[in-house]
Image (cartoon, rainbow, N blue to C red; front, side, top):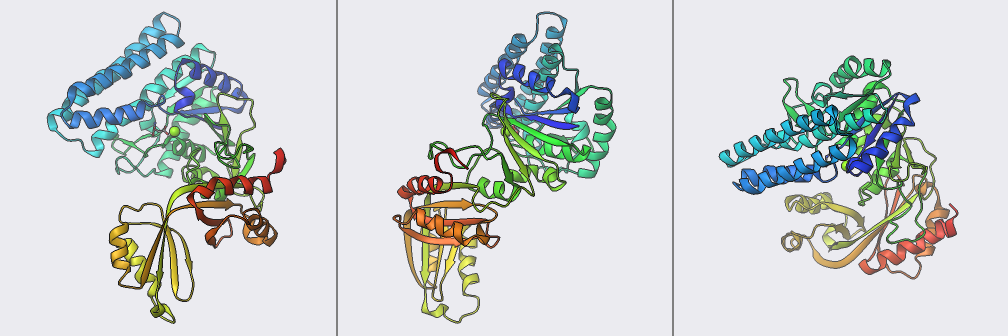
Length: 452
Ligand code: ASP
Ligand code: MG
């Protein structure tokens, strides 16, 4: 069996749900289970509703509920022929909206919202989309069966970021989902949503549907997981920066994780770890272009010296120089302790015998950081820097690749340089306005004119 997950834009409106149905129909022989996100934007709207209600803005909250109701009922009407099924689906959706209105009233009376109450509201997006998708799929010849996420995705009671309980999820999936698949049905479940042992609704955290798909895939020993989204897959660079950026057909999990930390937003690899760890291949596909080849993420794709580039501006370098550092124990820990105290995370570090240079993304606490660091040595701050990351699992073993990379940016001033211990990421700190030119030159060097 396989798990097919549709993100919010892939079930965002009637046309998208129609495309999703054909994607599943084409894969019936692979015994699919379907995991769906909420309609694009619905979770944000629900979270805003909870917030407004708890701040006493009941009218705005109810307006939000009604706007969502209209959107879902209209989508149902666009997907289903007039008749009993449409009436029943609209009635079922309406019950959820009535509940949302009551919850909003309750929160506005209380004047606050607990994480548990926020989950009760935020989880409705997937409950609604999954009901809609089941009806639409059936009308399009896919024998879909709704599976209530709260009966299978068993979690801790850490609301808004619940910890899944893999053993319980496996047991429930084998008991509830497996027999449906065996009967030739297509189980459809909302992602992101779970429940405690006592049936109290939880969520896995924003973007949690990928996590759900991965957990179900692991629980059922899926042959593959397909994540359907609105981009072709992972690319060699941001196509807005590098015109020749191209699809990466196979990428290693560690490379994908490294790119995600630089804001490659396709998916957060940690969410698919449960499946990838078991050797289940995870694909990313574009539901607007189902014929595309997509990206396959595995633990053991070939180790290329260079797979992709990522970059970002808005980086600040802080340098601390002190002769006292020479032959001293614990100097670094003293410095990092200052960053810890000011809740500032450090991205890149380079040291010499008497100086330490670090980069930070978030300069909110810069002034107080500098005051405290000045106790330890001479401090200088360089703003308007940027990071260029050259990501490839085989980078550390290839001095040829490293020298080509540095050669490609020979006329760009590099302020700092660091190779991660695992050799997967060669990071250059350059002037912020040189990030894009550096990315283009590096890309031309490693992926010239469309040949990879
Ligand atoms: N609907 C949820 C969110 O927007 C979960 C997801 O889409 O993955 O965060
Ligand atoms: Mg998503």
